[in-house]
Image (cartoon, rainbow, N blue to C red; front, side, top):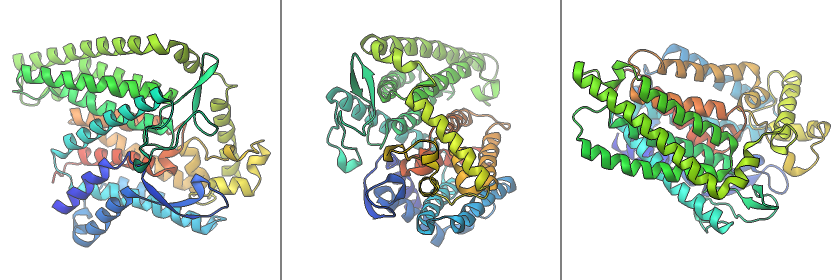
Length: 453
């Protein structure tokens, strides 16, 4: 078990690291969604899976509810069937293996975690989110990469193909961190934001904690929040901005309205009242901190924020998403069983669907920016239904009795990710996105299951 736990925590630490080797291309030139890559994280994730299969498979037998087994089984079954409907069997087979990798890692991990591992996972996410925020700040200040290509950082600069925002008649580079796109960095920093807020409110829950120690801890957490929120700001990802606001607002409301059972199941009367008072005090402080951060960031970046914060149906980032969604409905209608997992882009190209929607440039040939419509396009309506039901059941499990601080934190994070999936595709198509998405599944299954290892 010790080896498994070591492999698991190394895998979690490598979620933001994009170090890889490109092994094969299914098409000429290079296209991210039609290439076979082997990532540094694969070494430890696959090591974890094979070690688990060889030594601990019995632990998996009765861990999951029938609803989860049925929905996940349906999702995987139709994903498997879809490879035989693909115009590129090899690409779909590779994509299926990628899916199996993160699914097996997720459901196996949930069976070997211990109670205190929840804090360790959130601590890792918080630390690496702060690190990624430093990288983001460096990229924004330099307006180019900071030389971390060995960690997967893209070659960045003010040149075509790199994401930028208009500013004062020119453009500014959006922060990427070590991810292939600013939106993915924004999603990862949301995990750090939730992690830090989890620890921020933890001091009002744990009975017997010394007030001075808690104050010092909250100071460090507040510093971490500053850098993570700054990092989210520099991604200029409007989705990440909106979800960060919703995350903070959720924790503020949580601080004010927390049910008695979440305060402490062991304290009643005056003790329970005091912990509630501390929680509400922390919520007020969080409001103050958040307003201060927003003001602090708006002073130097106000001229960039205001245009970026406005949304128009005519701007490319919005109009293209609308077009991709229309494409998805077209593909679903023509191929109700799917075009093959991982094959939506190549199918849309070869069947001239991109051309039919006036997307004639190679940079426009991207996946549908909605993981639910993308899933339905690739693995069919029934497969997408299994995928959606799996997450519905996971989310509902979190809302059952004994709604703890841990359950609340995971529920906020998984809900934020499910919302992010409405407007982007990386949770389905890219390694780092898949890993962080299914890591949330690990946390949700583990924390909502009565069995504790």
